[in-house]
Structure formats: C-alpha cells, structure tokens
Length: 334
Image 1 (cartoon, helix red, strand yellow):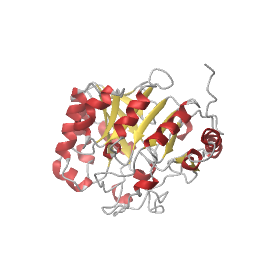
Image 2 (cartoon, helix red, strand yellow):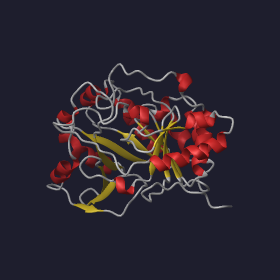
Image 3 (cartoon, one colour):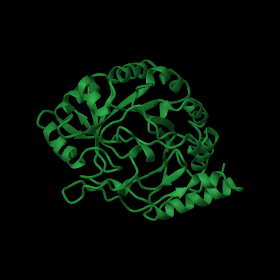
Image 4 (cartoon, one colour):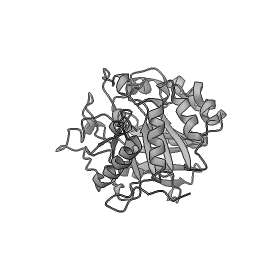
C-alpha cells in the first residue's frame, strides 16, 4: 500500500487528527457556550451520513489517524451510531482510534453500541456534581441523566475522561472535589479555559478563570508531577500523587499550545476550519457535491493546509470583551 500524501501546513505541523461535527444541535444550553434561544442549522444543510463517511475517508487517505466525533451533542443525531460503525471498521488499519465528546445525557442508551462499534474511550463534558449548579449552568435539570450515562459507559468498558470548563464564581470551589471524584472512579479529569466564541448572555470576563491560577491553588493541597501521557489532543497532563489519577490542562489563553497543533475541525455542514480561533475556512460540502468529489476534496484539503494560521489570538480582558469569532463552539464542533 502506498504511503499517504500527508497534510503538512506552512509551519511544518502534520495534521493527523480530525474533529468531525455531526450536528450543531444540543439538548443542553450551557451558558458559556450558547444562548437559551439558539438558532440551529436547518437539517437540509447538514451533511448526510454518506457524505460524512466520504469526508472521513478523504482525511484518512491523507494520513489522519484519529477521528473525534463532536457536535453540538453528537448523540442527538439518530444515525450517529451507523457512522461510528462504518469508521470503526478502519480502526487498526487506517485509523488508530475513533472517539467522541459527549455531554452524556443520551449515553445510557448508546454506550454499549458505541463500544461494540469500536469506540474505546470517550470524553464527557461535566462542569459540576451539584444538581442546582448544573441546572443553572446548562439550563436543564439533567445531571441524573449524565451520571447514568457515565455509569453505562463504565459498564460497557469505555475509558472515560471528564472535561470540565473552569468558571470563576460557578465551579471554581468545586474543582478539587471534581478531581477527587473523577480519580476515585478511575477517570482522568481535564480542565479547560472558557473560549471567546460566539455571543452569550453574560460577560465572559466575569467568569474567565485562568488555569495558571487553578493550578497554583491545587498545588497547595496536591502534588502535581508533569506526565509524559499524551492523547493526541492539546492537553498537558500531570500525575496527582494523592489521588493516583491524571489531571489534564487545556489553556488556550494563558499557555498557548498552537506550536504543536495537529488538528482540523469540520462542521456538520462541511466547512473546514484549520484553526478553531480563526476565520479561515474551506467548503468541503461543495467539493463532495461536485462532479469530481475525490479530486475536489483533495484540492480542498491542500488549500486548507496552506491557509492554516500559525496560532489563534484568543484574549479575554478589559480591552477584549467581544468574541474572537462570531460562530459558537457548537457550530464549529468541540
């Protein structure tokens, strides 16, 4: 088999990781992510299952080894499991893994099917273990469903990583508790800085919590030793001596990690964004629906690596209160 013609950008970074959104829809309305009355895309604009698979195959042919399915909430899409099954057949061949990020509200129903389809690990977004705080933050009383989904994932044999957005005045006093809980369950915990994407109904500067500050506070009670563990994403990991677990930090604002970026994101409508924080994009849907889909997709991917910027320029401070990009995170894909 011929070696794939890899995707290498203008800064010598090889793209091996695709984050593919299957929907922009979500059954939660987390306040840092979207407004209550979020306007979702018409379903007619969203790529079909066959188009999503063809797009993924195009990336695989160019050396992408990991695919993470995202949203919105990917499990609200009814044919999502069919796509996972199709991609799962490539694990061990063209792909190292297929994973997904989920809020776990629908996971109890789908965890066993995901494991059967070839998924081995998942990321679950969970910002609090307090039911009232969860309700206020997500605008939905769904913590019980999330915890049931987590239990189902463990029962299905899926490795679980908990993702928590650190928010000042919301969950900053609970981060140690969340870490102890996650590690006690055998899960890694990754903390994430809130990102300035899309208009929301509060000032992000009021809730922005730098992870440099969080780490300093945690180190008053815990021993954090840098770890060599990597998952292909942007997190830096630490081994926590007191809990025996791992803590990841994703800090796009305080400790930029763009120099090692190996990712591209594709929206549910087939718009490829080489950088989460940039406005550059390439229309893959047009390529897929052209008279020469294979050739046009090849050319589109070549354009994407040419326009991938060196870094994003996220800022949240008194002089930078507007979103870095008008599109919401759920539109781009997590």
